[in-house]
Image 1: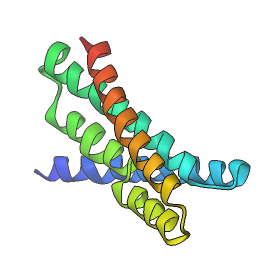
Image 2: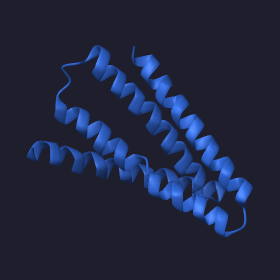
Image 3: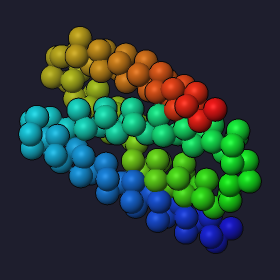
Length: 123
């Protein structure tokens, strides 16, 4: 159990640092961190589908600590539902309701699509 906790801790820290860096770059060059959040969430969905499919279909003997490191740790730290919701709230608070719904719609549709794509590639 201790190794699993350490795996989540280390993976989560790395994932959160990558998310922060991507958002900072997008904020600096595109003036908004939402593009960075969107990108890491979509990439995270793809990678989660890929890892899930690989663990299920090709590497079914993948060590549990490695699966947890990647999925719960790294991808959990990389992607962020709370930031996504805060950004939607900020759109709504600013009266940008169409932008809020477009962002929600695209994130959900592309997130599901890329999860499925990652899974298909793993097969």
